[in-house]
Length: 120
Image (tube, rainbow, N blue to C red; front, side, top):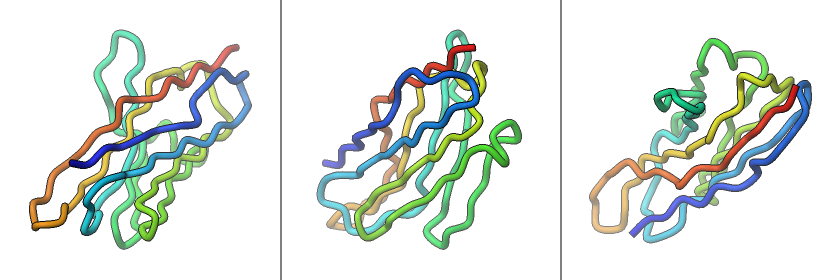
């Protein structure tokens, strides 16, 4: 089994910064794409940022230039540095990782989410 554990969410004022972390734990052989999705109240879960195993990144338009996704493949960790936060960034942020477990099966896993609240 694989478990994703997120941390770093919280309450911050507009213009502030937060750094989210996500650790993939379990019998992991390798990881492929790693990323973050956000779900604002009443909305669907949407892509925030993703990073491939080669380090190629992709961001939602509204996050480009403010958020930075990074990874430490050796530690099976993915991070999201969030700068210049806006009230509309308020959401539950979910980590997702494509994992090849020991034994060969590859699957997408999701964390339980961490709440980011940005006050105006």
